[in-house]
Image 1 (cartoon, rainbow, N blue to C red):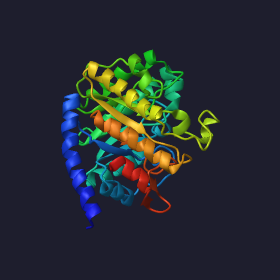
Image 2: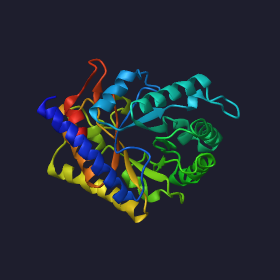
Image 3: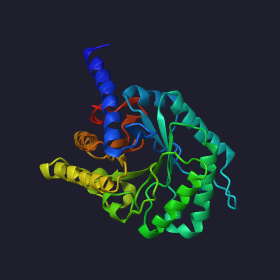
Image 4: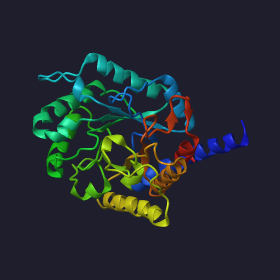
Length: 327
């Protein structure tokens, strides 16, 4: 092992000790998931990317301790009550959780891309509650597993409607797992500015998740699916004012959470691959280091989509992004 490798190993060991201490000091809780995570986007959420053991081996070897498993469930539910999940789909999710656990990785299991719920919450409320009943019962005996009730609730569903639905979904989980760690975020895509409108249930095992992609015109530049809503290719980042904005944004989020005695997770952050590699690495390092300075656990977006830190075609990490996350 070379000197650089020894230094990285030592940093990870020390980092885990410090992260555990920081998490307890910052939130008062001993969380069920780790401090440095990555989302497996595009794999079980409809993106069609492969999810294999070698990818999880690479995640663990790099130094991550948690994977977030975004799963699209809504198109795998029966059309009529009790809205049963397709058995084969549940089996695929089972395999992914088992494979992560076999490699010592904690798992956050997410309901992802349920846009129909945000578009018509009254119609889809029974389906969401039935879904969480099935998930909670299936994994009742499984440890090192946190639940995330809904990824990025958004308009036309209002914060008030989400605040009413959230405790209902949580109650379904709690009927089976009273102490399971559950992540919830605010409406309006889990952004920091939406936190003041979030009403939290009185539950010591709930953690608040936020997603951070500011400035959006930089992080999503060139994203064709946004139809020009983000910046054009070549949008740069890294001025002193932009660095300071990251610091103040995350400090605002932490202040909100601490005022309510709630643990906070930075549940997504990342950059589209159209951005300049150096700028991507600089932004990623800035967000990650500020999160750690504030005692936040974090989960990067993501492993291998067009925001990815890992290049599936080369079966190799994009080293500047990996190092920006793991040091």
